[in-house]
Figure 1 (cartoon, rainbow, N blue to C red):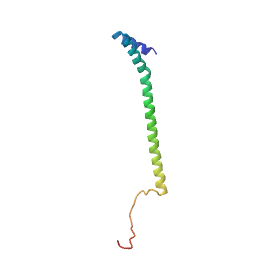
Figure 2 (cartoon, one colour; figure 1 turned 90 degrees about the vertical axis):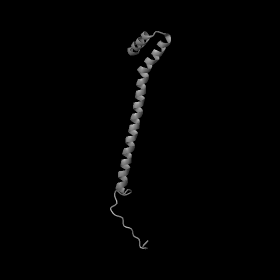
Figure 3 (tube, one colour; figure 1 turned 135 degrees about the horizontal axis):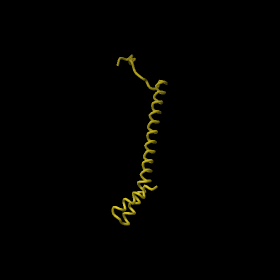
Length: 88
Protein backbone atom coordinates (compact mmCIF):
# COMPACT_ATOMS: atom_id res chain seq x y z
CA UNK A 1 0.00 0.00 0.00
CA UNK A 2 3.02 2.28 0.23
CA UNK A 3 3.48 2.37 -3.56
CA UNK A 4 0.62 4.85 -4.22
CA UNK A 5 2.00 7.29 -1.66
CA UNK A 6 5.51 7.08 -3.10
CA UNK A 7 4.07 7.70 -6.56
CA UNK A 8 1.97 10.58 -5.23
CA UNK A 9 4.97 12.18 -3.54
CA UNK A 10 6.98 11.97 -6.76
CA UNK A 11 4.05 13.45 -8.67
CA UNK A 12 3.60 16.25 -6.13
CA UNK A 13 7.30 17.19 -6.14
CA UNK A 14 7.24 17.84 -9.87
CA UNK A 15 4.57 20.57 -9.78
CA UNK A 16 2.98 21.30 -6.42
CA UNK A 17 -0.70 22.20 -6.47
CA UNK A 18 -3.95 21.04 -4.95
CA UNK A 19 -5.50 19.95 -8.26
CA UNK A 20 -2.39 18.05 -9.27
CA UNK A 21 -2.30 16.39 -5.86
CA UNK A 22 -5.92 15.22 -6.30
CA UNK A 23 -5.25 14.03 -9.86
CA UNK A 24 -2.15 12.24 -8.66
CA UNK A 25 -4.16 10.45 -5.98
CA UNK A 26 -6.76 9.35 -8.53
CA UNK A 27 -4.02 8.19 -10.88
CA UNK A 28 -2.36 6.27 -8.05
CA UNK A 29 -5.55 4.54 -7.02
CA UNK A 30 -6.44 3.76 -10.63
CA UNK A 31 -2.97 2.40 -11.28
CA UNK A 32 -2.96 0.42 -8.04
CA UNK A 33 -6.45 -1.10 -8.12
CA UNK A 34 -8.32 -0.18 -11.29
CA UNK A 35 -5.78 -1.41 -13.80
CA UNK A 36 -5.32 -4.67 -11.92
CA UNK A 37 -9.08 -5.13 -11.76
CA UNK A 38 -9.52 -4.24 -15.43
CA UNK A 39 -6.84 -6.71 -16.48
CA UNK A 40 -8.42 -9.40 -14.29
CA UNK A 41 -11.87 -8.79 -15.79
CA UNK A 42 -10.48 -8.89 -19.34
CA UNK A 43 -8.61 -12.12 -18.62
CA UNK A 44 -11.77 -13.63 -17.14
CA UNK A 45 -13.77 -12.69 -20.24
CA UNK A 46 -11.05 -14.03 -22.51
CA UNK A 47 -10.93 -17.23 -20.48
CA UNK A 48 -14.69 -17.64 -20.66
CA UNK A 49 -14.67 -16.93 -24.39
CA UNK A 50 -11.86 -19.42 -24.93
CA UNK A 51 -13.65 -22.07 -22.85
CA UNK A 52 -16.88 -21.45 -24.77
CA UNK A 53 -15.12 -21.64 -28.15
CA UNK A 54 -13.23 -24.83 -27.25
CA UNK A 55 -16.39 -26.39 -25.84
CA UNK A 56 -18.28 -25.50 -29.01
CA UNK A 57 -15.57 -27.04 -31.19
CA UNK A 58 -15.52 -30.17 -29.03
CA UNK A 59 -19.30 -30.58 -29.16
CA UNK A 60 -19.33 -30.02 -32.93
CA UNK A 61 -16.62 -32.62 -33.47
CA UNK A 62 -18.46 -35.10 -31.22
CA UNK A 63 -21.73 -34.42 -33.06
CA UNK A 64 -20.03 -35.03 -36.41
CA UNK A 65 -18.46 -38.27 -35.18
CA UNK A 66 -21.80 -39.48 -33.87
CA UNK A 67 -23.55 -38.51 -37.11
CA UNK A 68 -20.91 -40.27 -39.21
CA UNK A 69 -21.10 -43.43 -37.11
CA UNK A 70 -24.89 -43.51 -37.32
CA UNK A 71 -24.83 -43.02 -41.09
CA UNK A 72 -26.39 -39.55 -41.19
CA UNK A 73 -23.28 -38.07 -42.82
CA UNK A 74 -21.70 -40.06 -45.65
CA UNK A 75 -17.92 -39.94 -45.30
CA UNK A 76 -17.12 -40.48 -48.96
CA UNK A 77 -18.93 -41.43 -52.13
CA UNK A 78 -17.09 -44.00 -54.22
CA UNK A 79 -19.53 -44.18 -57.11
CA UNK A 80 -23.03 -43.12 -57.94
CA UNK A 81 -25.40 -45.43 -59.76
CA UNK A 82 -28.53 -43.94 -61.19
CA UNK A 83 -31.42 -46.19 -62.06
CA UNK A 84 -33.10 -44.51 -64.98
CA UNK A 85 -35.52 -46.92 -66.62
CA UNK A 86 -37.22 -44.26 -68.74
CA UNK A 87 -33.98 -43.30 -70.49
CA UNK A 88 -34.23 -39.60 -69.74
